[in-house]
Length: 148
Length: 202
Ligand SMILES: [Zn+2]
Image (cartoon, rainbow over all chains, first blue to last red):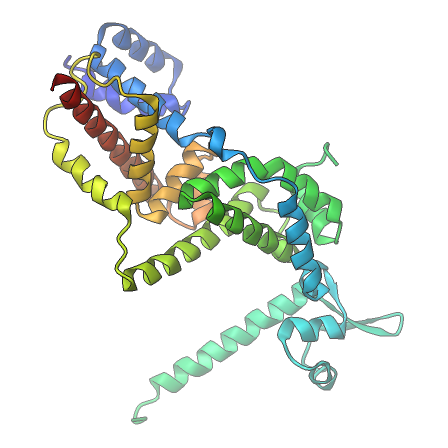
């Protein structure tokens, strides 16, 4: 019985499949002679089973995917592609498209076949930079003394 | 489609391929739904969350970096959504003073836990239904963060490192969460064995 504490600590490791073979062998031998540790082992098995998939856990059918697709179709295509049109970028930033055209020089845009386009990744990076700028402005304003 | 890895499918999805989405869904719907069900312990809520998570996955595909693995990315979205939903529901039910029924029994578990556990094999033969109830009750009583770490380990068989990545936590914290979670489940189970035995003696 002296080793029980050590072996109990190993039971979960064994359940996780993370026990080295020689240690696992010693644990097996101990389990063969120790009812208390066997009870502990069966608790672990019971917990595993109770957490795992039961008859009530059947995932819902294809209707889930259909509903999600319908929801996706209802929003502008902005977020699903790598490349955005000015209209899609406007939808993404939730501003009128005119604002996009007016600020083309501030935005990471490119031209292809005579059309203005934006790479989603560049836009995201650009937004990140804007956030940093905004944050440092707010912070420096907060740090300024004498504002009551 | 079936020969592609999850990561390759996500890159296709990123390019707007809808069939890639369906394949990813088929692959992960069982695991994802089970995770969500165990997180919130309610089938209707889990079904609702499943849709929200899938929606977010499709919407976030564009920002997915192909260097990372798909599963931690997917479960990160799922866990964040779950934690948000659970937190806002908890806030609402607090205001309406509706306590989680599960928490009441969790206290009993601690009180009943007096003698040393597992002295004989005769003790501890509990009906399978009771075991499930006891474990799920204890699960409901866990902090949602601990619960998510435990479930990613138990259901998805994720490594500590993957869970740390998924939950954005240090590996040591993940280990602690899992250990505490398992210990609480175990204690609740022992408590149910004790009550069961008392019932049998009477
Ligand atoms: Zn022992």
